[in-house]
Image 1: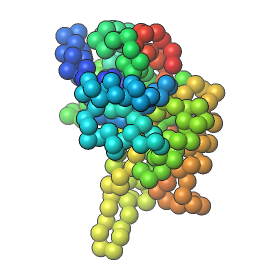
Image 2 (image 1 turned 60 degrees about the vertical axis):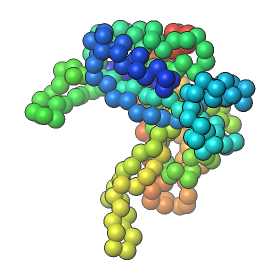
Image 3 (image 1 turned 135 degrees about the horizontal axis):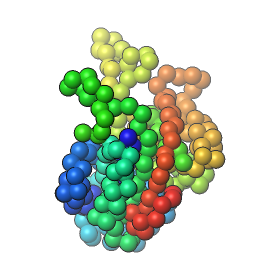
Length: 127
Length: 107
């Protein structure tokens, strides 16, 4: 089993959710995070992002201080079988790719064991 | 590649992020978390708090950069000599990484 961690744009969450379920990966966990990438954020790009409405106005002042300018992202976590990793990564890239910086990153981590809380069985897959 | 998860005091986040950026680790993800540690939370007067707010930083780095990264976080997130609640750092393996905008593998 593998854990697929995908950091994506918040305005792509709905498309990603439906694309994943269409391709047979209905189970996922996601949460809002703030972060920055390799390139940092320049004020020009920030104006464009604000105009597109990707960031809510009220959170900008709070998080984009000189100490650390951060962008709101959504992190999707899926636990999938080894064989499905390639497909999941493809689906996420297809759905989220705009070709611009800030589209996101995907990481694949190993999972050693999984248990079903309902009946205490060792889960053989992510569902 | 390695995933470094650092759970630190919220008031230290700004400093740690600044130090990381100037040391060449600009890419960081931050999330709010609540939890307790070995000390089972804190008791102030009559009230017991066992969900203490912390911030979790997620950083993906190459294997060779891990020691540097951990040292920087240790140095900046520290508040005193062995003060409880300064946080924890966990390192786990990452097998693959992809950039969505290009579709290419690698950091």
